[in-house]
Image 1 (cartoon, one colour):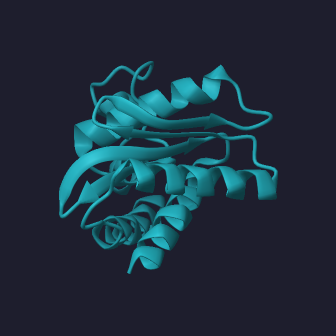
Image 2 (tube, one colour; image 1 turned 120 degrees about the vertical axis):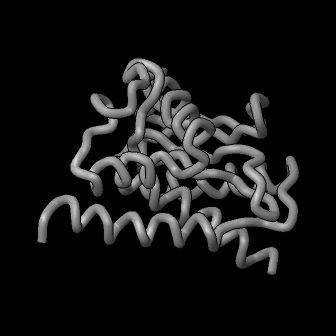
Length: 160
């Protein structure tokens, strides 16, 4: 299997996650619950992560765990810009470029100093509309992505 075909298979999974993990409503209380759960998971697993949730341009949750740094905050911002620009998770965007045999940094025409198509930022959708972004930075990109998906899927299931 080629790298592009593996990326295409992964992209199918990532886009399915985005279709599945949506909400009928998502307010500040939900942001607190998801952000707090990400902090709890990070602490329990000893992850040196930063966690952030944005509603539009408003940061509604942020936490930095031991071992994280300001670099993680910068990574979050760069991943969030990618989600806002492409309306997909930062991991899906990078994976889409790889599935086409292209590199995001050289093919997107976006400044790599301000845009990062690395895993960890996930679109927050209410009834299909993009209302914000949930993100984690500090782990390998697939692990960042999977941690966010775990917390959002758990929250969605708990809400029924």
